[in-house]
Length: 250
Image (cartoon, rainbow, N blue to C red; front, side, top):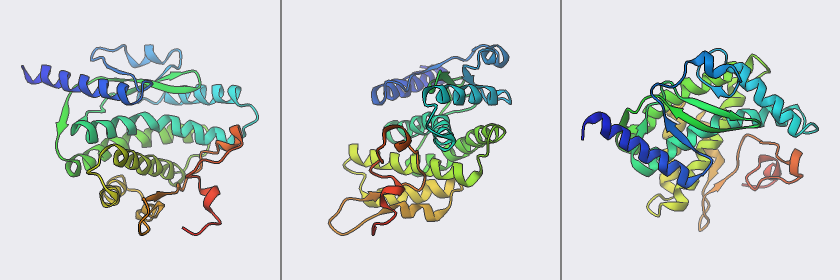
């Protein structure tokens, strides 16, 4: 098997595992995908170009139609979460599931009305390594991708780095706990160790690791610093919502 065919086979394995974990996480490889401008016409794709603000605006408009009474704060939080969730989940599934990291160069995400589901890799190059080796490499790619989305979103409404970073950190920390649930060898100390490496590599404030706490004879506890404001929709607070715990002793 040539290196090219091996890479394609391994990337296909990542895509298959992504679908197995979350059926909506449905990706494909298209090395000769349509040109950016032709894909952008219907505002259906985030393509890594300046026109992405049009797709983000269309996403927010559809969310507004779905939840006209939710308020701007909810729409902002939901939009930003949707922009970030797929790259983080793909990265975690690749690193912790297969010890591989795909190349996000030319990575595209699909907008389907009020959601971001589906993606395309334009390169099949992969990097193999340990978790400690791959996390900093993943961070290099994700920081570029998320800063692009943030600046595009910020051109439409205020989305400052601190606000955006808290959501990214919470997605990372929450996924580390998901790894712990399925990997018996990944214990609380592993979560804390990898959390510190992720936050440092992503240039996120070290203090955000305090979202994770360990008490004697209790499982690790996680309370987000960002709020998705889902209670604006379903009148319920998430179990890890900061508003639900602001008056409690952690």
